[in-house]
Structures are given as C-alpha cells and as structure tokens.
Length: 348
Length: 131
Image (tube, rainbow over all chains, first blue to last red; front, side, top):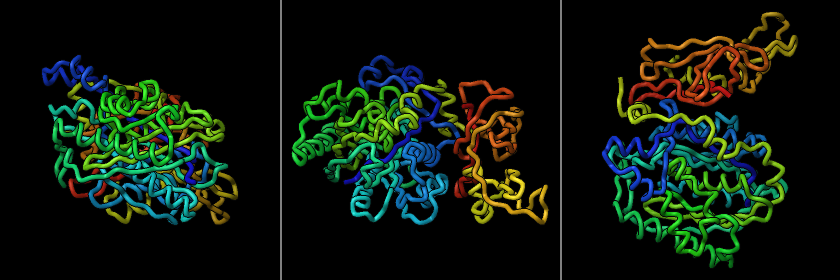
C-alpha cells in the first residue's frame, strides 16, 4: 500500500487583509469576510514564484522524512503558475533538493488539483515498486484580476509530500483513492493571459460542489467508510465557505473540518490548498486517526483520499516545521500599493 | 551574473545549495569552491562540501541605488554571512519582520535572483532570511 513518508509546506511572509483590498474597490469588507469566510491572504515576495515555493516545501519534506533525496525516483509539481511555459519546475526542484539524476519528473496542471493528481500517480508507482520514493508538490502564486472577487482569495503557498511503500517509514497510509472528472467550463486561463476567467456563480453547484461531493460519496461507497469514521476532513478551499457547505451536505461536522481549513488565514493557494490542509491535519493526527481529503480542480475534477495515520507519525513529528508556525510566524502586512508592486502590477 | 545557459548550468550546485569544497588534507573549507587549497598547494585533495546554510550576519548594507538588473528589487539588503562551518559568503537578505543587525542568525532560502527580459531565463539562487 502507498505510504506517506514525509511532508513539508511553505507560505510566503507577506499578508494583505480583506479590509485593504475592499478599501481600494469601495466594497464592504465585512460583507466579503462574511460571504467568503476569509480574513487575509498570503502574497508572494517579488522574488518568489511557484518554483521557489515548491523548493522550500520540498526541502522541508525531505528533512521531515529523513530519506536520502537521491532515492527519490519521481518528482511531480502541480501548479497553474509554473514560471516557465516550457521548462519544468520539477527539474528545478530536483536540483535544489539534490535528488540526483536517476529520476523521472514532470510538471502537472489541473487547475487546483494537480498536486493530488501527482499523489495518485506516485501511489501507483510506489505500489508497483517502480520507485522507492516519489515526491508530489502543489505550489502556486495564483492570480486574481484586480477588482474581481478572486482578488480577495488568490494567494500563494505550497506543500510537498513524499510517497513510498515501506510501512516502517510511514507516517500515514493512503487506504484508497477515487476521482470524479468531467468537462466543465467553470474557470480557465488561456495561454498568455495574465489572469484567469470564470463563470461566476457557475463555479459553485455544477463545478465545485458536484465534483467534491460526487468524489467523496464514491470514496465512501468504495471503502465502506462513513463520515463518522474520519477524525479530520480536508476539502479544496477556494474560499472559507464552500468546503463547509460541502461538508454539511456530506454529513461532516465543522469540527472535522476545522484543522484543515486554512483559507480564512492564508487565502486560496490553488494547487497547494488541499495538500496544505492535509499537512496541517497531519501535524495534529495521532496513530489510527482517519483523514478524508478531497481536492478540486476547475475544468473539472476531484480526487478523494482515505488516509490513516500510522505509529510512525509521532517519531517524525519533532523534525517537522508545523504548518501553523509557518503561517503565523514572520507575517508582514502590506498595503495595496506594495501588493501591486510584489505582483508586478506596477513597475519602475 | 552571467546570462548564458552554459555558465548558469555549470554553477547551479553552488547557487542552489551552497556547495563549496573541503581540502581533505588540511580540512580547510571553501566557499565558493576552489580547485587548489591555499595551504596545501600541490598536496591539495579537494572534495565537494555542502554547507548547512545557517550562519550569522558579519556585516550588511542596504542598497538604494541598485544595478540595472535589480532595479525592481531596491531597496534591498546585502550581507556578508559567516556560515556556521566558518566560510564567509555574500548574500541577499529577504523580507523579514525582524531587523537585520550584525550577529543576526540567518538561514538559507531559495529565491529568484535575476529574471532576464521577457523571453529569457530565470536565475534562482540562495538568499538568506533571519532565523
């Protein structure tokens, strides 16, 4: 069975509050905060991109796992903001973590769920013993058009997971996974376009909710597990509201969702979102805890996972950098002008 | 910073990961790498040495009038870091909620150093942040 051997995350230091964005567009901050359940979002520094975030997360994952990075046989980086259109982020990561050259690598794109697609690919490769270890990363410096509702949530961050097949090194076992996929035009960005476009309210019922709920129900059916069997549940979180609504429809409580819901304090990290939530939950999980994870990528699809923490999670906990420590420590609040400068919205 | 693909490729190890050298003969550490040890000359026996990436600020300055390539970055702080293993290295200090002083503990981070014109390469490099 595929095992999670280690993980690491990265979230930039800069933050912008909902109040500051709302001030610029003369909108109601309280209305936005209540409607989207978000208080602030992370903003990448001028010298950060999806590759630098992926590398920082990957280095933490290697430290946490305790493995020799040269034994990593596959690296997949999921993002919708890869720095190059042609030249893989995954090779930059492999060089930066000194993984050597005996590996396969590729960049993935499936809106916000490419990181979990990578996890599924590695499950097959680890289960079949094609590789000893593989690394999947979800990393983004997501874009929101100025004045668009997305601007309140589109943020930056990433998470890296190392997958293997040796139970002795495991911190959690991936019990099973299923996917639900359809051609749904809810959100897209054409080649060369600076910002994504979306279908407004169409991104809700036929897109996010249909896919997240369908995939999760399929997982329940396939595994025989019920909502009450899970200590934690993590859904993709384009805002702080959608995952809680989906959870309610599936019979999951706010309590089960609480520890994996990071969007209210860092925004939507796109490809990083569900994996960052999983990492936050693993920071707290104890052996035997079951974790439900369902990602969502526009276009559209959801990958759903049943994961169970193993005895090894306690032994490696001391060398992990906790998600909430990374999120809370070193925050620097910026105004809209600095936000624009960092996002290259204004230049000298 | 060189802008050719070949020179960038040759230096990736030392730009991404603080890989220097150690003379196995006298144990002297070097960053950047040297082929010949200053102490041992012809007796030099060099091997690669990856530094941990932690150290402290030995000296620093804030750049307000930058080179053209760093125009968008200014003002930014450049420091001489004494690595925990001993060698001194120059590096940019990234944004932080902590004030940079002589003696400030720092750790290596991975950032963009230089972005060539619209169709060019992106040069990644180690920088440092207060620990």
